[in-house]
Structure formats: C-alpha cells, structure tokens
Length: 310
Image 1 (cartoon, rainbow, N blue to C red):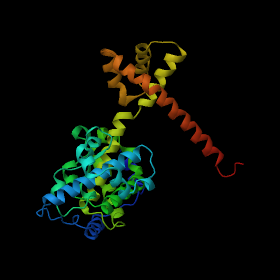
Image 2 (cartoon, rainbow, N blue to C red):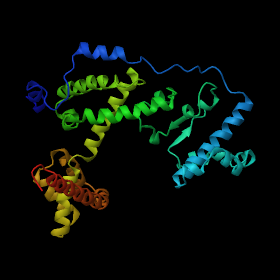
Image 3 (cartoon, rainbow, N blue to C red):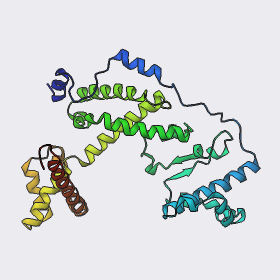
Image 4 (tube, one colour):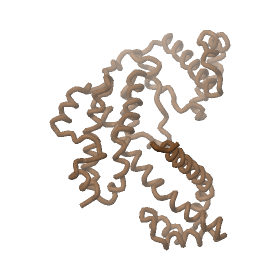
C-alpha cells in the first residue's frame, strides 16, 4: 500500500477536505458555465483604427518607462500625447518595437485590434515564448478576458497553490504509482472547484485550467529540480574539499546510489561528455549555496520563534 493510500485510510490527514462526487457537482452548478460572450462581428472603421493604434502606442511607451523606473504619476496620458504627437508615433512605427524586441512580456494581438467590442486590456495577450509556455494559449487568446476576470484568476491560482499545497508531497507518484496519483489529483480537483465558488468571475473552464496548470507546473518543477540540490551538494563537497575533478566527483555520487530520481541522468552524463553538466554545475553552485544559507537562516529563525524559547 502506498503512503498516500495509508494516509487516506487514516482519514486523509493533511490532504485537505474529502469532497464527494455529489458535492463536487453541486460546486460546478454554482460556477459560471463560461466567460461573458463577446460579439466578434463588429469591426473598427479606419478612423477608429488610427485612434486605437495611437492609444496603444502610448500604452507601450508608458509600460516601457515604468520598466525603466519612472513613476506612474509622471506618465499622465495627456502629458505623453504632448511629448509624442501622432506624427512622432507614426514615424516610430507606433513603438511596436517594444513588443518585438522582448522589452515587454506581452503584445496587443493584431486580430483583437480589429474588434470593436473589446477594450484595450482585452486586446492585450501574454507572449507564449517557444510556443509551449502555456497549456492552452490559443484558448486563452480567444477568451477575451477582462481585467477583472484576469485579476480574479491570479488570486484564484494563488489560493489553490496555498490550500492544495499538500499535493506537492506526492508528485513523485506521477511516475511511480500513476493510479494513486490520479486519485490524488482528482481529490485536489474537487477541492479546487469548491475554492472557485468563493470567486464570482471564475468559470468552470477557468477553474479546471488553473488546477491543471498548477499540477503541470508542480510536475515540471519536480522533474527539473527534485534531488538536484542534493546531487550538486555532494559533487560540490568533493570538488572543493577533496579537489577532485567534476567527473570523478560525479562518479562517486552516482555510486552512492542515494539519488534515485537522478541516477539515470548521472549515468548518461558519465557515459558521454560531462561538459554541459559541469557548466550547469558551475552556475548552480552559487545558486545552491544561496539557497542553503537561506534554509539555515529560516531554520534558525524558526528555532528562535519556538514557544518557550527566549
């Protein structure tokens, strides 16, 4: 029996509320079935398009200046219009360069800029770097979410990451006990839907998407970093204290058979060129020491805050 199964039999201590299927369906019925409909048929006329592009150019300028540290009070739209008149904006290509060169992490979607029913925020979408940063980027773009919906979505994501944090301890089951992992994610999904009922603008689809992205991020973080700190710490001890080469140090750590999730990675590296991992080790070493110091600091602070200690 898995540890998670034993814990569930003991009443699910530390795993959040046990929600029945009937209760789950009840929560679904309380949520909006979809985000508000947007009429995509009305289009801007030529005069409206010019006005829009000039306005969006000022948004890009303002965003860039905020990134450079300028105060928001100094970026009044009327003041910017005097500094950047229409002829200047047009001459500079409506400052779209700020979107294209990566200065901004978002852009005004060209297709959205044709629709008359949208406000400027609804025309703005996040960049999908590499084409895979988001689970459903195309669906996100077509949602035409308002600022109010996005703000609630962010708060909802923060809430489920705190209240369903218990599931982080079981991510390894995704590769070792898939059936049990499915049960636990199902349990978490039920809890996420209940949490969604506290919000007025989170639809069933958004609630589901937020939970799946949370699980996806946990899995990715786990496979990208779990046990790596331990591997690098053991390598670091041998390289710095025993003056061993990176390959010899890694070989010893591999022979310890202590880091099961990283055994195959170390095996592969040892059978091939170590240079990539050695470069990564050089960069990670400083980051690791910073995390180690932070952990020690938190540990000491926790001891000092223990009841009964002065």
